[in-house]
Image (cartoon, rainbow, N blue to C red; front, side, top):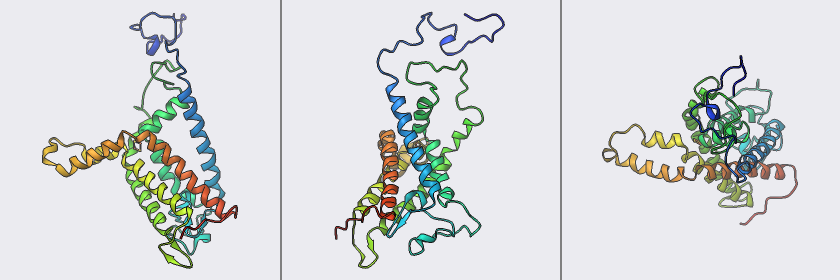
Length: 272
Ligand code: FES
């Protein structure tokens, strides 16, 4: 019931059209497990990546450059002078070079359709799970500032393709040994190659990618190439959530690997 003078609550579970049942919801399973696990996993990554992004150290050990710091755009990318050189930002940049580049993958993941679901549920309870109402009485969706910016996802997708290209380049460089040349591998080569593949799979499984390659067409029959690409993107898209997690873990592991090498915790095992 509505208190006299209070704003009438007319939406969601308070909508007049809803069946008059006293329970907030009728789910009896452990529906809170998935949003709780999601929130914990995301929080762990946020803490780790924030620490590493601001560390401004231990991000290069030839031939490996941490994906958090690549491409390293600032002049202060001193430690990797002999590595891939992308210095387009001058010496005026005094902060960690990771901050220059992380904004792109961060924006891509923050506006991603899957991650939106994950953090709306995990952190905002909006809604916490299927058939469990959110605590708020009003729902405005993504129609207003700031959430209307989520529409920019497709632009972050273009940036993410560039970043995936750079990480691929970095992975190729891990096949080169400083003293023996090309065609040599270490454990890091495997870590970097798997990471690059997962980043590509996540990026190409993006909902925006699927729309970019196959959307806004009236007849697929007249666009066989785009139809083919759209089918591939669609197949990958079915695994988008899994790829989002797999690539999140792999990118953190690749960074951790470089950190451990750079701090001398162990040496890169070489295969040949
Ligand atoms: Fe997830 Fe585009 S929808 S990356």
